[in-house]
Length: 211
Image (cartoon, rainbow, N blue to C red; front, side):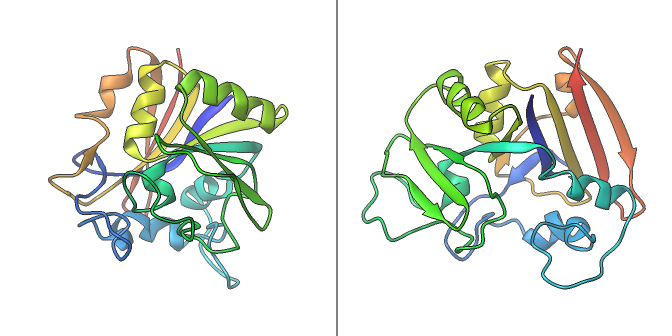
C-alpha cells in the first residue's frame, strides 16, 4: 500500500508557507500552529519524555510508523538548498536520530551519493514517480510506502494516481499563501472516499481511501 500519513494542512489548504530557509523550514508558517496537536500526543514520533495525550490524535501519530517499510520525499523536505549541491555537508533537518528508520528516497534533479544516518539511509533519485515507487516498494519488502511530502511530492503522486490511502490533519490556521495542496479536500472525492473526524484538540482529521 502507498500512504500519506500525518500530513498537516492549514484550513485554507496550504501545507507550507513561503520563504523556506534553514531557520524556517515551513517558511512564514509557524510550525507550532501545524504540529501542536501532534506534539501533545503520547506517540508523537519526536517525543523524548514520558507523558502525552491519548485518543484520536494519538491514534494518528501512533500509526505514522505502523507497517512502513520506506518513505519517498521531495528535496525540500530533506533541506532548504536549491539547485546543484554546493557541498555534501548538509545531512537533513534531523541529525543522527531521524524519525524514519527505513530507507528514504529523496526526489531531486541533482543526485548525490546515498547517506546513512543511524538506521536510516537516504537515496537521491532523479526519476519518475513510477520508477521511484517501484524501487521503494522493493526496499519496503512487503510493507507500506509512505509519501512523506512536501506538497509538490504529494501532488505529483496524486497526479500519477499512485496513492492508495491518505490521512491529513486540517489545522485551524490560515496561511494565505505558500504551497497549496487543494482548494478543498472534496477535490479528491472522485477517486477517494472521504471521512472527516473532528478532534477535541481543535483539528480535523481527514481519512481518504480509494473508491
